[in-house]
Image 1 (cartoon, helix red, strand yellow):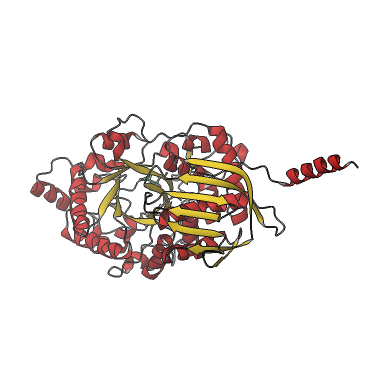
Image 2 (tube, protein in one colour; image 1 turned 120 degrees about the vertical axis):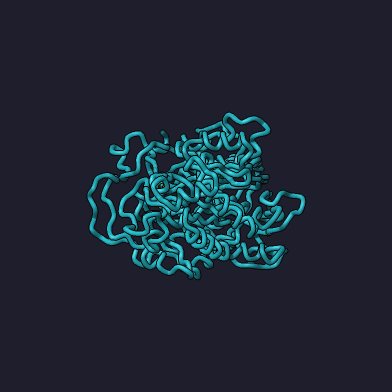
Amino acid sequence: MRPLMTIILSAAVFMAALPSFAVSIVPQPVSIRENRSVVRLPRTLTFYGQTRALKNLADVWGDSYGMIAGVRTGNEKKADVKLYIDDAMEAEEYGLEVSVENGVVIRGGSPAGVWWGMQSLAQILLQSDGGDGRPFTVPGLTVQDRPHFGYRSGMLDCCRHFFTVDEVKKFIDILALHKLNTFHWHLTDDQGWRIEIKKYPLLTEIGSVRKETVVGRHGSNVYDGTPYGEGCFYSQKQIREIVKYASDRYITIIPEIEMPGHAEAALASYQWLGCKGEGYEVWPSWGVNEEIFCVGKESTFEFLEDVLDEVCDLFPGEYIHIGGDEVPYVRWKECPDCQARMKAEGITDVAYLQGYLLKRIENHLNAKGRHIIGWDEILDAGVTPTATVMSWRGPSGGIRAAKQGNHVVMVPNTYFYLDYYQTSDPKKNGEPLAIGGYVPLSKSWSFDPYDQLSEDEKQYITGVQANLWTEYIATFDHAQQMILPRYCALSEVAWCEDRTDLDDFRERVKSAMLPMYDRLGLNYAKYGFYE
Ligand code: TNX
């Protein structure tokens, strides 16, 4: 062969061996630029962290992504990945650079920013993996990124069905993978009380167990005859462990203690908490329950404040969620104590009795430096200006709240209820029984948190969240396929101010996230992707 031909041919072979990149990241970064260089990184990465917190992040990252790359710590010069704090950046902002000269450099405004950058790194590495133990071949690139919302959250209901400490930790890992920074932990409900309270041990002795569970749709009147929930609660020791696990991943936990409704498990444990004072059981059915806390008696307030004191000792975050949803007032209308309370307080509408409870509880928590969040029903109960409203019955409650100057978290069921079906034909697609509804990936992704709000009102939207209620979700495997890949849509709505290209989003989910779920052994929905 002539020399020129040989050169051309071997150049072509060499070029073909080079990966043709266009790295995908979810959520879409503010900017990402690739250059033509290729950086080879070993399968065991040496990390350098400028501070102690950053060194710790290398270990945490290794725990999460050990399936992708091994991790050790080393000195600055020789490290493959270098982590720095950049005081000029916002706390959660990060910059990520991959270059032949410096390997991977991640700078963040705080360790949290660096941590989010490290999630992007995991996605980049996975797409640069040639397999068979070969080094990663990463394109030279520069990413600049910061989240749009400071509140980005997933809620898990551990009451209707219980998830173990390890499963809750895995849930927290999944939040981190999607750059979500808040875990709303639903811990008390009619069907089970799941948090140990030292002063009231019966809450978990009696309140965690229901004697049976309704089969299929609620209202079916068929019960399984099998007790559920024995030992299914989190001890305070376990809670501290989970809080630490989350905070090592820059995730804040917001515990929810439901009041005055969704409370029958508490009433079953201490019967004097209800208006009738007897006849309560941990509820074996789903839906809206008429048995609620009695707010006529002072003993109820003592109980709630004691419980919240222990909750505050366990959870260091600013927010405590106090529920407030789906409260039928029938018992209060009949209860002499509640009626006497209304009279004494000059309350004429029974809805405002809920407002009275809220106000007292809010004062108690404010005195401890905490703030309350409540479901959007609190808007009708005489909400205070300082309460954050969580809009779940569509976005309308949130819009109303923002217009009156309350802070808002948007969790509209029409976009972010992940207990809803993911396809329009669940039977044909083999979706397991769900509560109802229809929220495909594209629907979640299309949510506009600022709909109908003026420039000025937008400031009250602090962020977005998706809820996973678990009436119909008994296992963590099932839970995962309800949140994945829809968490990709949540994270993109939470992280990116503008979203315009649904096809591009789907492509990025396919290249960056589905292989990630596979590699990490996470279970995700295999249907509904294109609806
Ligand atoms: C309404 S959302 C509820 C929950 C249910 C959920 C089922 C909210 C604040 N209350 O108790 O689990 O619907 O989708």
